[in-house]
Amino acid sequence: MQSQANAYIPWPVVEFMGCNLKDIAPAQQTSLKALAGKRVGIDAFLTAFQFLTTMRDRSPQGDGMPLRDANGNPVSHLMGFLHRTATLLSMGIKPVYVFDGTSPELKADEMAARRARREEAEAVHKEALAAGDFALAQKMAARIMHYSPQMVEETQRLLDLMGVPWVTAAAEGEAQAAVMAAKGQLDVVATQDWDALLYGSPVLVRNLMDDGAKRYGRLVHAQSIDLSEMLSSNELSREQLVDLAIMIGTDYHPGIKGIGPKTGLKLIKKFGTLEAVCEAKEKEVPERLSEIREIFLNHPAVDVDDAQLQQGQVDRKGLVQYLQEERQFSQRRMDQAFEKLKEGGYLREGGQTSLFSFDG
Image (cartoon, rainbow, N blue to C red; front, side, top):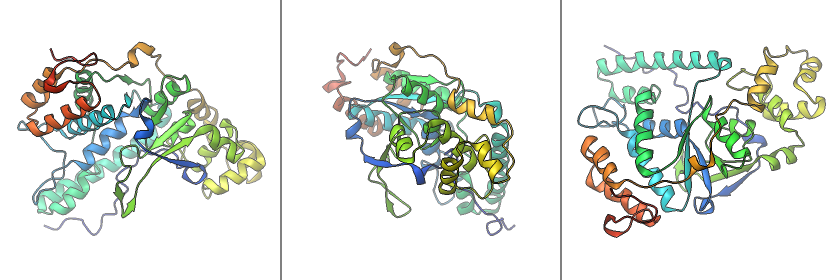
């Protein structure tokens, strides 16, 4: 039986990036050290997706799916969040993870398209496994990853044991983080999703944990984008930036054919509004334009009390019971995490409690 390896054209593994504003965003190189002492809002779903697509079964006859414990339950997300969170804490960074809530109704078409692509990949993945084409199966596995509600609950349990605050958004996670940052509750928003700027985040940090790593043969650096500087350098208002993004294409509208970031920037600066651009270029005004604008400019968000954002106590025994006893984490993995927590001042030598940790 032959698989469809040669007939299948893959799409990018990471697709949840929002509107690509790279060409008009003045980025400054930054680093984890520069964020010491800062409260950083982190897009939990994109972070989990990264873990699920990188920590997979790549053995010669592996199915390419996330690593599992002895009971067959995925653990890649827990491994990733444990290591990353301990690393951030060790460097004096104050993480706040923001989880997606319910997707806005305006995003229904985009979500349906994603489901269709995933179902297509699932069919190819199943066929490849049946044919013994493990290389193709592993390739397709990266495209069918799903951060399930159970995984979300498991992640939140882990974060509770680490004393790390988390928030569930009313709708989009990066939007919730942006609203909180605009209120001064977060210093920066860390996500690969450019939409955080459209939602009003004063500062966006991309490639937070990839600084110094190589991607596709290139050295990657963490980048910081300041919204005010971006608007000023391009002579745009935030409302015009949103209109520009809608022209380029967002999760809520596919964009206007033939208009990319550079062309769109020239047009919005010349004509002022999306309606004026459409009139001048004889294009149809996007449907539900006012609703799309509103979702970027006034995105629904839950109110979060500042007290909810404080780093809590580290429950060492709880972490051992959950990760080592229940999920079969190795002693080495646990020791590495605890060592980082000690570096950050959250555990004393020998596991004794400190003002910032709890061992009971």
